[in-house]
Length: 289
Picture 1: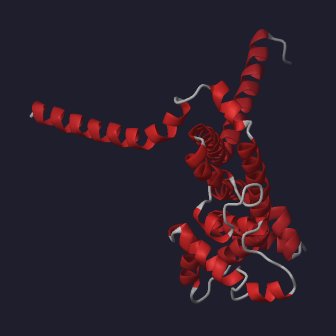
Picture 2: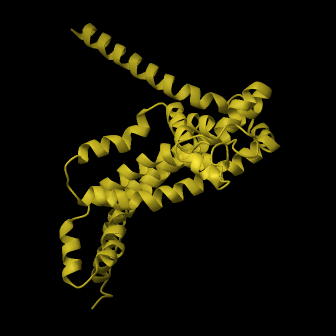
Picture 3: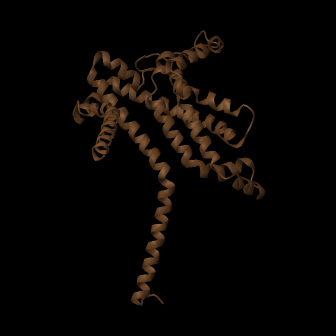
């Protein structure tokens, strides 16, 4: 019996270690191939610098658009029940599961030069495909569901009675949103924004299909890694290491945001306990009347 338990425990341990190794090893191996000084030197190349600048610029714009247009939609989904809502939820989350290349083809068929809407833009001399605008649109299309669903969950978690009380006291719907709903939902919104930004930063398939891989114009960091694989593997490794670090920091910020309310409560309890101990010690010493 003991031998059977030992065998089961050993098998379980082997499965867990194998799974963790499979997940962690491909991510960490890039940090052992070069020294930190080498990574920095390879990041200080025109290919790396241009792609880094473009990635930061485009993801800031795409995240801004996601928050601007996604927040009202998330609020609408959280506060309203209607026929077909479940179907709408599935459609909103669909960009997460469809292959990014398919998303790129769809964007190209709609906004490309000969696309459904792109041909009308072309009449006014506006070209979207294979430009930086296409990069932003591809990132926003793929990353938007992460923010919308997180924001919807955050808005749903706000007690509707608080909104009712605010409205009863004379607050308008907009004032209630900014003074009551938004502050209470902020941790969830920040979590969704961080996840969305991370996804936009790593977007590859839809970008290369809709925006191309033009150095200095549409070549983001993932595309630069793809290009560097054919010319200089060291630059690809350095860029990969940088993306892993940035992604780790974004996920770490998500965890901090998620646990911040509990940590804040803990600090308040700790402060209250310290104040009580201080009063108690003063009474014991006779310094408090």
